[in-house]
Image (cartoon, rainbow, N blue to C red; front, side, top):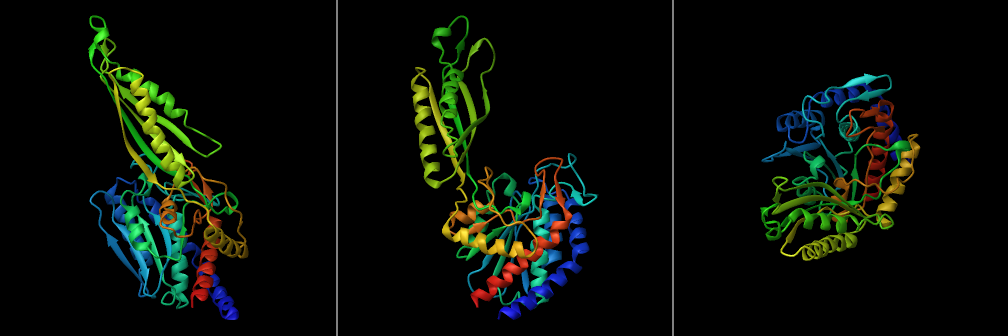
Length: 391
């Protein structure tokens, strides 16, 4: 069996090496289509390209229409049994006209989504093509989920992932590859909280004493909320937006803040949301006649490292090493991804398996083209080994 796997790995490597130019062409075609999350038409164009690239006799594609975003895509092999879940997204962060097009710059490729994460999609698609070339797709149960709303927290994508990946043996997510190919096993969870203060309007000169200043109340809450940040715990609270009042000479009767929260465990998430509600009540009680209502909550639970995900990381790292890539674990990442959703389902999960690069979410976004082939080889090697273990 070992000799058979090594022979298949050699055949896969030859196939992937011969596809290097095709991978770059596909990446360029994907990046040339703007797929900003709210650009539904552009996202669907990217989806049609992906379906054209990847669908075949052993890999079927289901498009799941969205009332707001581009269609979400799920590719499946026909092999029975609990699948290995491969997860990516096709949406990007820049609206049309701001940062556009694919450009080769020496050994780098630049453009919106070239790293985050159209490069990762090409890696997965080429790995599946290699398995198809070997006649292995019919033997390995796989689902490849591509959502179209990840950059806004996957409000629809989370359910699609949960429904499709339920019972999966493991999850691999192809967000931007980190420096030295570090593998992400931990991500903070995220949440969005809004707090609205209500007071009583009055003329600031003639009836000041009759007013209840909502801005004063919400300001006291802001101070209390910010103080919940605890770097030692990995907990952050950031009041990112505040609004209120109508004019200088009117006591404001309404004010509102929007808050970003980050946390490293499910228990900490629950504690933090409860504390924010407590601090809102305390702030309102300190300004007689005011009221503060808190809404929102947890958007994504954290990607937490477990014994199972550590074992998965070790197995993938061995494949990466064999392909000349780095194999270290990344430190805790502050941003969430769809890996958080898989982890919350109890599925062992690792992330950042896309090609290496930097500058995602900026106009400096770029990918190291030389990493496309070895990243694809590492994934193919891993899937061949995983498929052999399951048989």
